[in-house]
Image 1 (cartoon, helix red, strand yellow):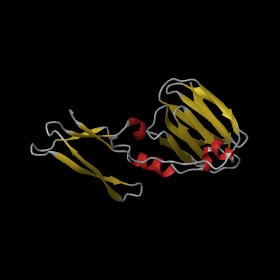
Image 2: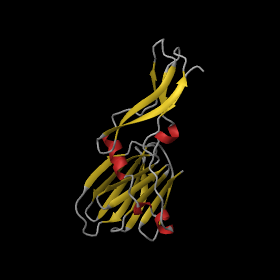
Image 3: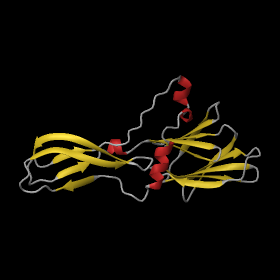
Image 4: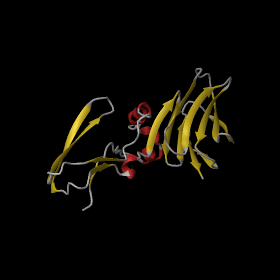
Length: 206
């Protein structure tokens, strides 16, 4: 055995839909909003990939490993993993995180009256108070623009960087008679937009 791996798995969010409508409308459940905002606060920190620990030459057995982590609310906790296995001290103990688990693929967030949901190349906009007017694509940087009726809505100008692939930045800006949603992409793509009766609009990149 050239080295031992300890895989640390954190932050798996599991949710279930209680109806067909809920499964089609991701905005029925916003359980991941706090997770998304927490990741925005930690954007300067690198994701865990691999850390190594070299044990002294007299080490022969690994009894346990204690992991201390920070929660969404800022509190810290510790979990102990019992190992109780022999080791070869010549090779480091490696702590790594599985990519499929580290990459939390579903994201929810909101700006003004609009709610957004991302999953891979899919981007969903929920606008219950505002009608979609038109949508188009701009270049340099590649940006999907979706205009909605303002309907006497309040003035607003805000944006958020997602830190994710495909959809890099999302902004909502109030114009004289409309709200403009701008979705900046991380590269050059074509897209389709489909609207549902519940004022939910789904963008798919290709």
